[in-house]
Image (cartoon, rainbow, N blue to C red; front, side):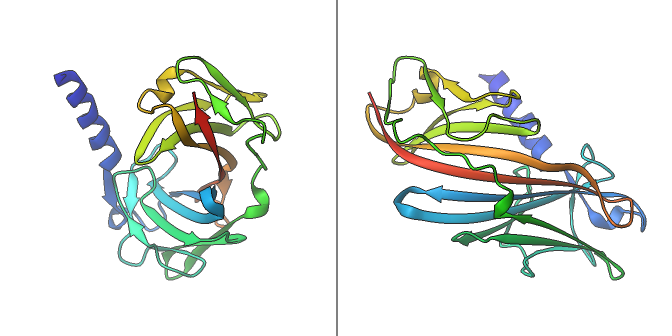
Length: 232
């Protein structure tokens, strides 16, 4: 048990590690990691979530808390929440689908970098209408409606039942057309109704060079679809 706590502590420490952007030299590189997620939730609810994080020099650099003259806007609005616990520090959340989201990174008074992510860039993915039930004590598989995975894409599957969330299954193999999941994914759940969540993540640019030829950008778009199913 002590080993488990130690591992958790190490993960939390690594996820919280960051530095202030005030340590940067004027021309030092900043890596922008930008994401927009479009969610199609139960009861016909939709939601758009935008997230951003910044790293020193490149994608492997320590994450930065933007301070002083450095800041980030999404569709001309300041961030709604900030946390150093998760991968993305800055988050915006909106009801409904925002067709186009524009990130505006202000590096200093003379340099601004604009990057957009649009709803039109998602890879359409659906849960088949014929997929209505899963077996709680057996291996299951889901063949989604949509194109096979390409390089830079992955699909994640998980279930929610009331306040309980089951485990998750993940596939990123290029050419994959299905996702498999065993009883361990349903371990915390019980027989009856549950909501299946399917998330497809697509990296649009993994190392885009900004207009100054220096500041690298990663753009990611995600779609989340849901469906009520029966656990048997």
